Image (cartoon, rainbow, N blue to C red; front, side, top):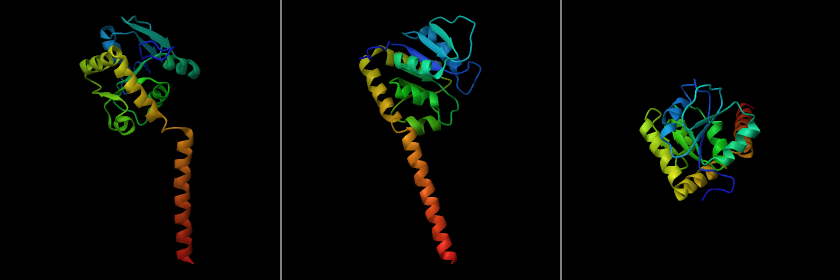
Length: 178
């Protein structure tokens, strides 16, 4: 079931002109989605059925919006990591992401993937999540659990491990040279 302040809705974030983020695909399917779509990011003056343009948001407000939405959709064509999906997953959103190698590497088993150019799959995947509280809750929990791997503490520990390994190699090389 939805969290107390959560409404069955879709949110996306990005500049509309950015072909890599592919937010335009979300706008094309929005009229056919079961729930409203909120778009955080670049300004938009045109009206699109079932879409509310939020414009650029301060980070704190974006995080609040993510905490109120159920599904975060970003059908990227290219994304090396993706802070948006990470923040959305940590906020409890189910994820619908573009099927790219980097997104699969990070979110396999914790997100639904769609071909960035397959609007039917994008619409159907979002609607399947919106239509079922149980399905949405399952993917939300998977995303939240995966997001917990990508904390600042985990990143710092990873860097520390690499630095320690490099220092040990340097020490070994120095011992061999003496």
